[in-house]
Every structure is written in C-alpha cells, then in structure tokens.
Image (cartoon, rainbow, N blue to C red; front, side, top):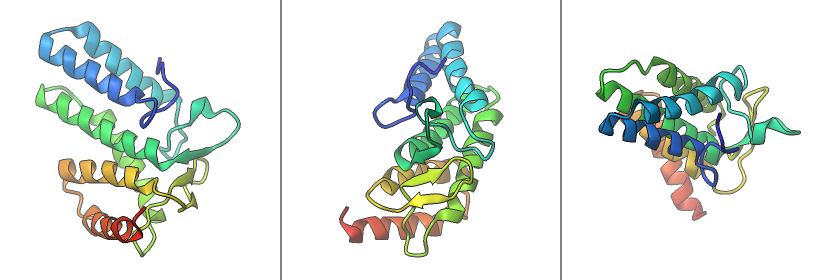
Amino acid sequence: YGYGRELGFAGQTFQTARLSIIYGLENGSQEDVDFGLKVMRSWIQKRRFPNGIFMSNRNRGHNNRDASNLGWAISELTRVSQALRAHGMDASEFEAAATQLVDVILPGVREDGALGSVWNGDTGEVVTYNGDGGGFMLMGLVRYWLATGDERLKPVIDNAFKYYYESDI
C-alpha cells in the first residue's frame, strides 16, 4: 500500500488517504475508510525510521528526508486524527506518529527560526537549512499546534514565520 512514493508535496499520498477516510466517514463507505487507513498504516509501520522520520522514495539509496514531505506528514496525520476523533474512532496511532515526528524535528530548529530543509532519517539531525523547505514544515507544525495546543510550538512557529518572512524566500 502507499501507492505513491511521497507523503506530500508532489505525491500527496497522505492527503489522498485522508480524503478517502473522510469520504468514507461522511458517506458510510467502510471500504473507503479502510483503504485510507491501510495506506497510512503501511507508511507508519513499514516506511519510517525508528525515530519517526518517514522514508523517501521507498528509501532508495539515501536516508535523507525533505521538510516538505515531513511537514505534510505532520499535517495529514493530525488531520486524520481529528477526523477519526470527530467520528468517535481511536486515533492514537496517528496522533503518536505525528507527535514522534514533531519531537524529532524540534531539536533541529535554529535559534533564528530556521526549521531545516533536509533531515537524516538515521540520526534525526538536520542536514541542511538551505532554501524554503522549512515553510512546508511550518505548515505541519501550525496544524499540529492548533489541534494539540502543544506549548513548545508557539515560540517555534512565531520565530519561523519571522525568519521566513524576513528571508523573503
């Protein structure tokens, strides 16, 4: 499962899975719910490093992961959690995956607000801060913060918005 090779940005595997889940929940189609859950669970169970960072392109030849896909992962895991909870379903595995990813990302945030654009899947460390990839990470962190109220994120989000706005990237 996980018919795409990317979580977000160009591939949108997680977004497609979330939309399948929501469609199924809203229209009574268990088949659509099950399909979306199966896709997301396959990534959580088989396509991520022990620290929570998801693999790229089925991890062919490198262990680095870009911020756009990690940001989309946090966002979509959070949105699936919200949809499941709204329908009285257990969302703990998706909440845990989003939280684990946030937890591995936060230590790499620079004091000036840069979020990083590439992480090493093995170590969880930032490989580079170049470019605007952190803006996609920012999207995921904002979505997670709005859903959870995690106080660790408020200063990170404020500094990141300032950094990327002033950088004019």
